[in-house]
Length: 121
Length: 107
Image (cartoon, each protein chain N blue to C red):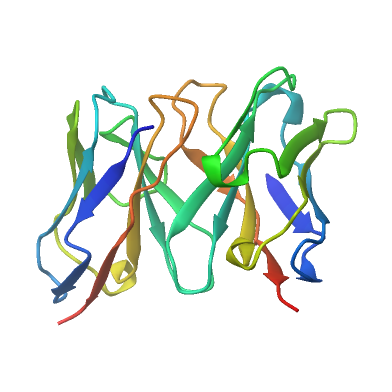
């Protein structure tokens, strides 16, 4: 059974940092692109970042470029999101998602339960 | 960057209704479009990939069509479980933009 479990969310002050983790199981993690998607309270989905299977390509939404870093450890079946210089507008539930890249169909076919990040003083 | 729009933003419907949601891309995305359903407090669920392909396990009342810049998601006969918010997402580039969402609520 495919499982994605996020952790690391919490309350952080503006300007602070947080590192999110996503533990993957039930599939060959190293064979898939992975994404982070966020959802601010009462708002829509926003794609944040993604990373190629081997980590050789990373992409970010403009609003987080230079502040967030996506990474992965294929030996540990884990995806990460290092978030620095956090702002109030980064407050959201952050989801880890597997992209259906292996079949080249794309679309995030598995999602974690999400972890809440609150940026507030 | 590719921008995605959806219409309507809210749709009020009754069980049994045929429902159509439109998604438009700011430039040609070929068929690289997915549709998701999301219920409150839950993670999104993939319904359709590559514009018209039904994800395994998704009821056949859901269908997708379109290519280029205009796409539609159709629910042929709305069921009680279908009241939710629906999002489109493009995969033509690796910057996977979502549409703003369409909420389907009870009329």
